Image 1: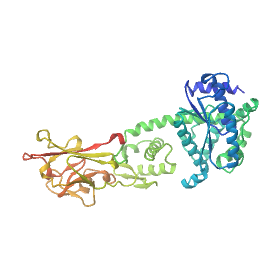
Image 2: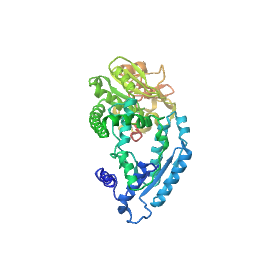
Image 3: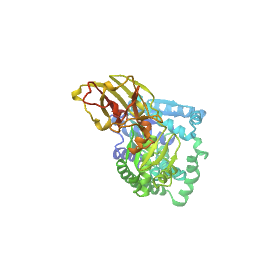
Length: 472
């Protein structure tokens, strides 16, 4: 067995996990993994931070996360961790939460609720204590268990990605070390640690894999199977990353995001891609819509794929997400947007946060005005004397009509937008501006003929829709 201190130091150097001046928050439970991690970080990098004599180390901070699942055991573990940190002059804190209660409230498993809390609380403490690194004790066996767990639950290639040595401010110096080597190092170094007896039970899925399945695999294939699975996982992850980059690059050319947050995809263009790339594009769309990596199950991806292939017209994916195939567009839409009525003064700026925009009004000189729409329809100049105040902004209502410029008559707005090939599923994002006599501007499209600028115009009102890019 290679000297563990040397191997960890090589991991840190090769992956550039720690730099001079870093302050590291260590997740410390008192178990063999986190105990070895904290001791090795202290031992191997003490010269950088202090002297060869045990002195209070301001660049290490240890944190015990108490889930309140095992009150008696946790009390003993906290005492052990406290004594360990006192011995090595390492600052120590405890963070806790009622995980069973949180799991019940959020309808999560105990494992998932605990994992979510650990992640969030460590990030919070790191910010508060100005730690720029968070060190976790994940090792090679954890990677194998994670891969098997995800494989049994059902996952794509992205789910078989091995645990990363470095992920943002998270570092895992033990990522390629086997559990047996960690325990052997602690025993040889005569360093005490605590055993979480709940890990010996097979009630939870991860524990079942660790206690029941892994020993059978190791008995038949030998200990080298871990490196084989890890290597396979890394190869798969590299290929998955490459294909995902291709899918993301292609997808950028096919989709746009509406001001109200709907995602619109060119249906014809996405349909020409092979299924494997298309699935990745759909996965990226769902991640973008839900707002986090990993979103979108295989079943959801297949449902959207059926839309693209013309076998469905619309599917509901829950969480207020509907996906619709409308003519040549694929639309991912959440709940319908309602643009409430608001008064519009002159001059004025009225915010429309639901479509990340604002309406601005003001008078301009007759010489600087234009008889045509400006900026592609987002700014208009109209005859101020033809307006019967007050003005208001609101969304389109059923039966709304107006007299488009140059048409010579009245037209239903729904029919007008259909002629413009505007999907009815996006019309909830289109504002209208009206006075006492009716609609004067279908925003982004056309003004009413009665407010157009003529040779008799004396006062010009300018109205502009301003996109709030910073809010996107």
